[in-house]
Length: 296
Image (tube, rainbow, N blue to C red):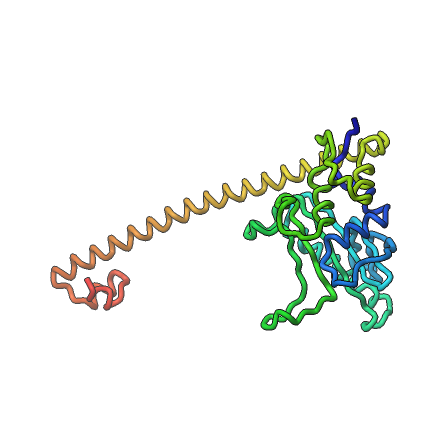
């Protein structure tokens, strides 16, 4: 019986989609919102490291970067956990991929669209519990039908994906099932996944027997680092929660003391007023307004 590795691991993900163009083409055509008739036909792998012309600017690295015959660029990222920093990095990488040709002397009119596909094995948008597929592009604030589609960023929350929901494309469902169902605990692969030649090949590429000892060790180290990072993020969150609760308790105590002092002040003012002390003197003595004293 075959044993499988999780395709979401860095090494396995890049082996499947960073070394086999036909699989990447099928994957991108299934998951990207490409216009009808504009599907990807051929691909050329590009260096995953984007080196700026200006040496003072920072290099950026993505998991898979490629372009098609029309010059459109496609960036693919597999991220195990969500942070705001990751969202900012995706935006930076997308903008950098779009601007690099101009930085190197090409005309602005020759710039081509950039699509970024970010697969997140985490909940990125908890405020949208019923949606796992999120596409961002530049849209007119008033007339939503008018868009600038040179840059599109797609985020897919894998934990929210269910095979019987939302996406109409059969291939999109198959590829997302491949990413979410295949792992070290898989004993038997569903026949439907193997019904497509590309997905079946991807499944074979994550069989444990396809990796040498050094690669298996690297994959184990990768999952260790993911576990440590998740623990660190969790501890940071819990510390933040505890600090927030402590600050909230202190704020509550301070508000209670302030309310108590205010009530005592009003009680004193009322007593003075009943004893015939002029309103102006009461107000000046206790730091109240004349209107506050008159209402008593």
